[in-house]
Image (cartoon, rainbow, N blue to C red; front, top):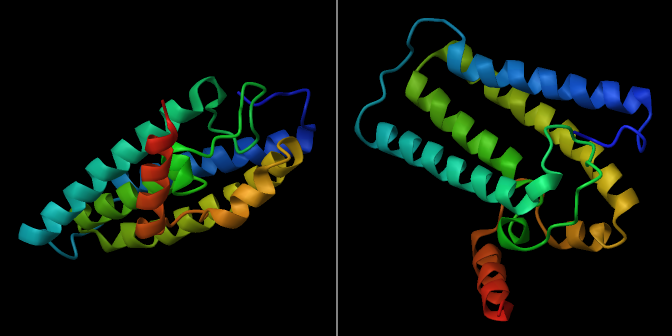
Length: 173
């Protein structure tokens, strides 16, 4: 949960409204009915399944790194700490990135055109959540702005990511 003493009622209402809308959009990616526009076969099925598995791994890595600071709210909890290593060395919002990657895989596997429009809506919503979250993080953690300037928001640069992860593992005893 976010720290209720740190944020006003309007901020908390906005934050949890975004979470509720996010849950509705995620449900729409999986459950929205409609006729199949395509039947995934072969490479598309393999690519979509790979995306979903990779997304799950990234989401778990992000959640584990956050530890007790994990919250669905874009307002950081009182237990939150600034994380800049591991998956957070690659992207500032790995759990949101994972939701988008996994969501794309689910849409591809589902084959329903009605679900295709949900994905950009989820992207827009998560972009808004990152904006709110980053304002709160910058206000709370003095080093956040420099971290944000050096680290992509949602789409990691694979070469830079590999170098940062390699450097992190070399410096860890």
